Length: 586
Image (cartoon, rainbow, N blue to C red; front, side):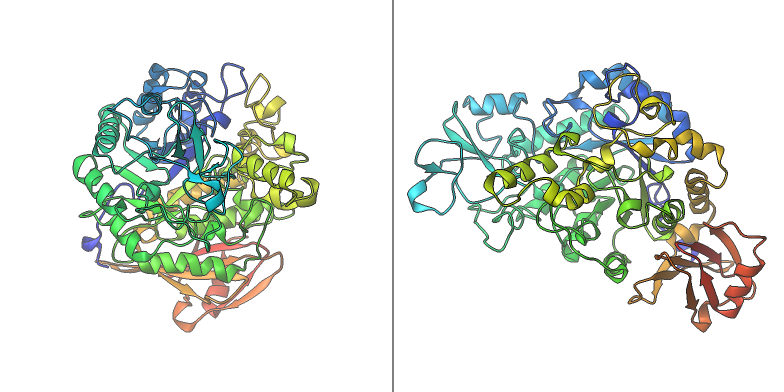
């Protein structure tokens, strides 16, 4: 691609840092992070070099799902601060040329939102804002619910993603409402044009306040199929296969694009489901259709997951490569990728895809190298830049996440699982709470996160893994992340270059080239990553070797770069455990 043909967008060239405010930094001693706490750390984000902050929900909420159950889209939750605090955060970020994107949660609201309060009361203006249905005769269907009128079953067999039926009976309205997530998260009825009007008006309100975009929570679930059919092949009995990429989803998002969005905003859609068909992905990202900048898919996040929180599957590196290769190829000419290996809903990536013991530091750097040298926009989840790890949960009392607790408690009560101890290792590995333990700022009490009692336990390894220690050590994960971010800013090939994988079936080494044609000739990089605890030899194809190449970045110290350069010239790399190297092949 000649340099003049690059379709530059600021969000393609950016690195996004995700802040989960509840666990980032607490300034008032209540054990919960807050917006003034983020303001206090803006210089930290600036020093790291990030370009964008994605802020998880800070809206008014009763916290059934840690803020993803919104009671008022235009108000700040009291424990996080005030709207004035939020405005100060926006100003402080913008003054450092850091943009801010907010979380948009509009598949559902809280049951305490005034729309739902009026809807359950039968107010004509709001009665169809949510998905209400009459129940079924329990003697005529094969499904049931523990709550609801005697002899009555929910409208269909759909299961909530958080366990139990996806329907709740409301005594006031004497009908059932759909909640794909928690019972306190009723799904909005996007078929109602007034719902769309309200959502688009709210989005415009936030854009007018100066934000730079939205991350859109489970946005591909907003269109439900006609008749809400059951699906016996779906673990959720149809609640996943039915709403995922539903019949009118592109129509609804195209309307959003026309009425609200702009290519200068960063919009990233979270796409729930095991595999998003590429034809849907391209429509989501087509500027003339749905108009999103990029999307989050879950294919790589499901490789090691069973159907339940207490189940694990085996995965191989070739499986992980295949997912990334499919998405790069699928969006090569149309669309743009987002790059992540952990977030607030996923375990820590160094514990999941790396080695969080002997090679914690090396594997954290290697995984960072992967994310920052593939084609797409990298997302850093808070603490990732330190190499933070999963938490050693010992009992159910250690957890706070409804997505961990409710399904497991239901399974134990039903006799499907003997006890927490019987499935402890898998639950430990899978739980979202791994990502939500407090940010580790220091080795001091509560890792410097709070002067009070933290809402969730602090990882015991805070003495080794914390910001103060990392920033004081030039060879730390933190400093390596700074270098990775700088590398993207200095080399267009890292952002816009073609991606060509090598050895796709190798389950130890992930290697690839990035190539960008410019007026001055081709820029070409080689990335070589050893995903193992052992030394490994890598024989390179002849067209990848170079006698004039240079090592741009690597996660092991080198005495000069003579050895690693001579290995490149010979086409025979000797990679140490979890070693990452990025070569300039020119």
